[in-house]
Image (cartoon, rainbow, N blue to C red; front, side, top):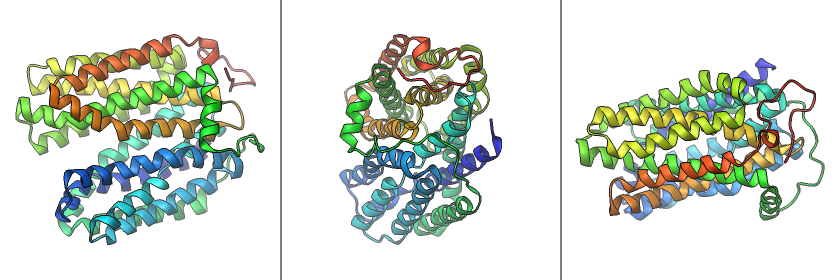
Length: 398
């Protein structure tokens, strides 16, 4: 596997997510300062995922047609613009516009995943996807900590710092990011999103993997959206304790994706690695609401993070292996779109479940992941590249 171009992609994605993480915890509080109601706060937060849902397949498919590098650079430039608009916002409408612009260009992960697929062998792909996930997790862990320090200078300062990082990232990519060798997609994929989605869903393996991606993200987001409420209600969890617990969970994901998932996939294959991750994730979600105290709840949160850390990159790798040459960006973009849809829908559903009973979000999420396990268990190893042996043909399709 060629390490140099992958290192550049990892660094690019890390800096991109670091900037995102800087303003994410501060955004609801700033919106409230501007007079936002709960509906406005929800709309501002959802606008990012909603626009990302629309743009990720387009950016992924565009990267198949014109190249990974120009699409990644355009995403970074758009993120810079989104952060600048957010920092200049002194009322709710421009704040909403800023987050929408950032979401519209926030699909850099899909072309980055496609880049990884272009330069990694099938045997190394899950390891490479895991390292990308570790970079994303590291950005989410360090970003809020950096944002907390910048918050003393105001929300605008934090936003402009994020914009500066995104702009520097654009320049970094402009000078050192090279276009990878890849198969041409031709003109077959110059089609609207719905046509691409229908085409992908006509393939049983792709359909199952996209559904599994949506359900996995939905289940994890349900926990993220409600754990603070559960912790406060049951254990008197403070904001500082919450930040520490989520930071530790992020560290678990980084370690799992950066060090463990590659070894597991090399030994057991992508599908079995995903099944192991689904088992761990489902168990953690189902056991979390039974925790007798905060320490045990934090332990189960670490279990959940480990399961997610195994399952997510394995799913991305299986999607890539199933896509075949010339469709990496398109299919991985659809995967990111399904994840974005889950991030938009998950908090609303989880909040409603929590209002009914504080254990319901975790029980439902756990059962959803059991469904993911069943969906993945129905795939044969041959169809998703499991137990691959070195060969000239790595990326098969169903």
